[in-house]
Length: 326
Ligand SMILES: CC(C)(COP(=O)(O)OP(=O)(O)OC[C@H]1O[C@@H](n2cnc3c(N)ncnc32)[C@H](O)[C@@H]1OP(=O)(O)O)[C@@H](O)C(=O)NCCC(=O)NCCS
Image 1 (tube, rainbow, N blue to C red):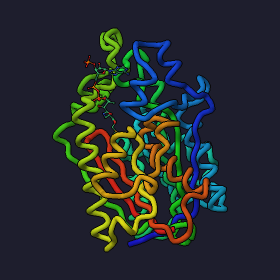
Image 2: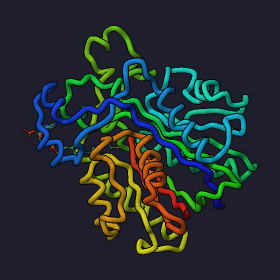
Image 3: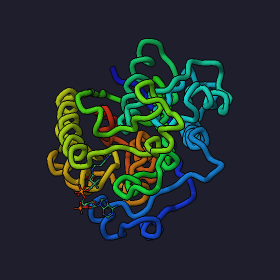
């Protein structure tokens, strides 16, 4: 079942952190980072900003774009792996900050960078069963969870937020279909394993610094990301009876320019139809797809009639792809 989308929003913090600044922090180089990742700079939240602030900025732009107020919302879903606090969820904070009615609000956490597209699928199902206006947010403030002494990981990430308003009467775009999947056989190769019941956050753990260490086997993650994202797009296009030639824009998760190029090559889509902003923002986790989508819409890149395909991949592993017609 397809459903309308009424508005798009995005937000990045003002502070730009360049590769040159990272060179001052640890043994790395602008050349290495650009060659291996395509990232030139990323945004870092100000000390006084938290996940909620980023989410609220993106939400307000999406609401304004939709031409509705927060009190028109019937539900709020936040996809994040870097929540405001451990409990309750970020969605509760956001409901209050926006001044929404006491509608259901909840987080989808732990899906890494795939969370937003999965949340979009949940919103589609919820709004189909019962007509509802649902705010769907992807937000990440990853910079605060990193130690800033691990060059292999810290150069990759940035902070940001993106949001859409799913609305059965929304006319800016139609969410046609979503596919999603999970393979939990490799939960240990992309993980921040401290803070749950398996390994609680204790003083002893704090002394190891593991609570700020994202464990990542780059090569394996790279290969799985390319394979799963390409397959998800193929499956999605098959389901909606389209081919890659029908796609005006592929908006992939912005983890790494080489992953994006490899997915584009596999799918045989010309690079000018693949949206890229990883050079400016790095990997913003579950914010990456909605942020790129909002930028493409507000920047006038996406125009009426366009078929836009979103695709994401993240820790878990989880993957998801969505088709939108503008
Ligand atoms: C992380 C990633 C960029 C590393 O690129 P790579 O080509 O695989 O590089 P390698 O890991 O083989 O490292 C090559 C060398 O660079 C070094 N290196 C790692 N990070 C570095 C940095 N920031 N600056 C300079 N050198 C670095 C390594 O120590 C290694 O040195 P060695 O050969 O002396 O051991 C790449 O694997 C990747 O993008 N993986 C996917 C990550 C991702 O997207 N995660 C999120 C998914 S949602």
